[in-house]
Image (cartoon, rainbow, N blue to C red):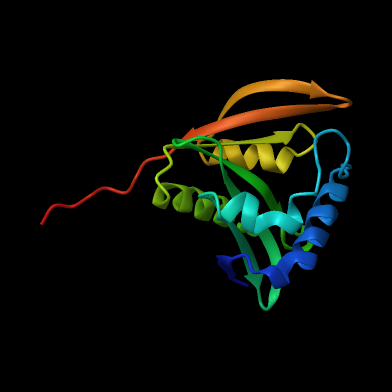
Length: 162
C-alpha cells in the first residue's frame, strides 16, 4: 500500500490526536510526562502553518496513518514535530517518506536546517533519523526520560541555468 501525503485539514484533528496517543503508548509514553504534550493539536493552523511551517498527514487507502509537523524556530531553522506512524503501518517506509516530505517542504519554505527531538524509548525514530543523515546535538534528562536532540542541514535543489 502506498502512502499519499497531503496537507492537514481541520477535519483530521480527532484522527491525528488519536494517532499521536496510540504512537506514544506504543513506546510507553503519554502526554503530560514532561516531554510530550498535546495542547498544540487544536491550534495546528496557528502554530505550524500560519507562521511559516506546515503540517502533513499520510493516508494509506482512505485512512490517516502518519503525520508530521514543521514549525519555524528562526529564519534558517524549522523543527520537525509530531512525526508519527500508526503501529499497524510501521516498517513500511512511511516514517521515512513523511520525514523526507517534511524536509523537502522545509527547503521549499527557505529553511537551511531542521531540528527535532525524540527519546531513547523511541529506537525506531532514532534509527530513522540516523539513516536520513541527522546528527545528534545533545541529550537531556527529563524526569525518567532521556531526550535526544538532533539536526540536519538541508541541501536546496540544484538550480539549472538554461
